[in-house]
Length: 434
Image: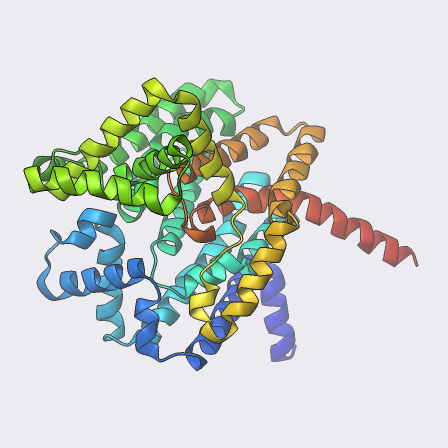
């Protein structure tokens, strides 16, 4: 057997490897084109968040100091990862971005593993993995220093280990799943409440009632591990700032909802709404001399006020944030490819104007219909719960491009894969008859 035939057989026998290689080639190609349009040092400052992450990681690497503005704002997880990555790559920007591309490609392969374990259909799993591999949002995030890629991978690993714990009954895996999902929360604060999903997912995953209660008990151990580990950081944050959260971006999300509500109530623009909240926080900070505490107090006071006076407007603002983030076509490619920025902006505008930005949601709904027809109710509910969780978290953000709902690909790639596989099989059968 020739080396090419051996390689082809390997890819056929290990579809996850095919997904990984495909994803890696796409991301490295993207990186090569990006570096042809800018200096490698500019890659570290493509957006303000990326710059903060990188500088915070450098501080941790050099001084082991975790009490920085960057960790206060975003949490310690991703800056710590960048500190390790900088050490491994010797400070090379190109090698750091290659490492990020490998991490993102691993995420695509993990989508295959997750989908195959969940669905038990290799064709659907392969389609789901390739959907993530070709996802323009995923490719773009692989080539910028933002926390979504690492959060995506850690959440997937946590879910896969959690599934494996149920399949094997190994108690240690429940503990490991708790550690990994807690690490995901350290990376992005939107993972703080993943433990709430776990008992429901356990009930949906297990059809055998005889062992369900025991599994649920161990699921609570997973949740407890998450809560304890997150609490280690949250209690430090609370002692310093009087706010029980993993990062300022937590109440910051609620602040976004407040701004959108203010803009609706006062019939003004988002820019003026931001200026309004910023002025309130600045005034409170001048008294407290503690910005996180001031921000949280102002946000909670405004939220309480709008809940009493304008509950409808507040609810609408939150739901609109969800919809806009779920269907946001605007990405980061315009800063990654500055020479092509006008073309990207025209494309995004065209897709939005023609309502083509709803295509994934439409295909996901069709996928839900297939699962209903096949009476796979538990699988459908499990995917909808994961999808709904990240949609709910996306409601606490705005003006943040398509990256906010990127974790939703953990669920929607599988839902969309169902109609795509059926469509592929239909045309393959039709052409084979001819």
